Image 1 (cartoon, rainbow, N blue to C red):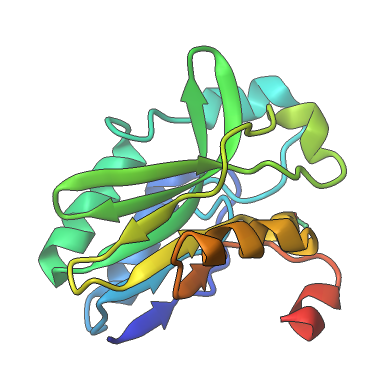
Image 2 (image 1 turned 45 degrees about the vertical axis):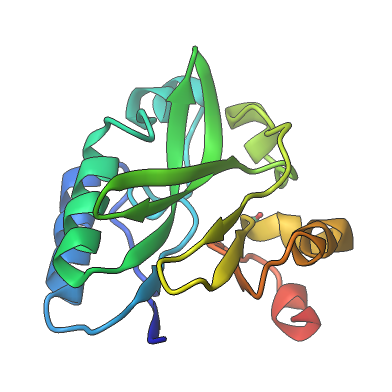
Length: 178
Ligand code: ACM
């Protein structure tokens, strides 16, 4: 399996530009699994909940999901991406797992970090474990979730072989811990 990681520098709140930058970066890349940062399509910083709510998308039918599915389809790959989602008036800091068929799984970050608690609702569902076409089982968590060992343990106990971890790290502890 070829795993790719894109360390992007998003333009704040410009989803179109960030999706175009991803397409351009991926055009010559070869991968079976691509992992993108936390909130890759909007950037990480927001003034308030209204600002992030205006950019949060439907994780199945929004433009980011559509763009990721098209890219995954072109590469016959699976993409794990951090993005802001909106479901039933709640805004989440989420990660989506997307193939050429569309969005396979959605995870809403449980452990919100710092000011994120004023922007997003916390997820209440366990992190997903998803089977890739080759049978590899991936688990998904978002940034500060790393600090809680139960997250990785819960996914390992459900058969995860690889943890995909979209992140916007602000402190050096995670890298050392991993
Ligand atoms: C973080 O959870 N983005 C630090």
